[in-house]
Length: 242
Image (cartoon, rainbow, N blue to C red; front, side):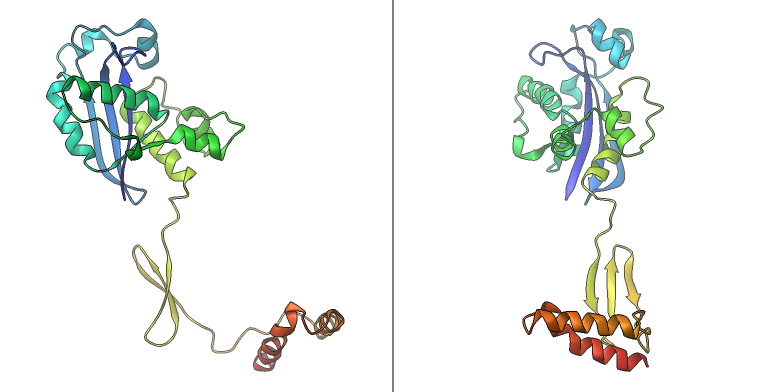
């Protein structure tokens, strides 16, 4: 499964008039970073950066003067994302801007079925909050001390770590399979991990007195006691360990 963790910075809050001025994204394959990224600054044309937005991301009008327009880089974005899922924190905001930019160019919008909102995921997982990106970094022990201002690529990198933690993706997939010799192995991403069986089982840690007390308790419960069906196996293990 391919996903792009992404973020945008904009000239303001109204996607009908304001424009995207930065986009950054991190590619995940099966919830592991591949190393592929996208990061582009964009000239918003005659739309100026609102002072409140400037205070958040620090991207000035002067810095954006020589950057390409959205029309010039739209295909690069489309090609990079491809058929992947779009994953963002407060995705309604980011997708509102992306789809507004696509609409201006006559490009098809990204459907909601291809979008994952990590803010919604966080609110379900941690209903008492807070669930801002900074708060989630603190919750999961992710270092965000270098995040003095918002930045699309930096925020995407942090969000990728948060997202992987939230969905438990750091646990590599393991599958139990039988070996040719009748043993078992765990199939991990980097090859099989062989589980070697003991020639003789370990001696039981229970004392004879504890075993007798347990047997007496089971007999009081009656023939339908769930432990009764394990008694034969326990007897066999005890005899093998002697």
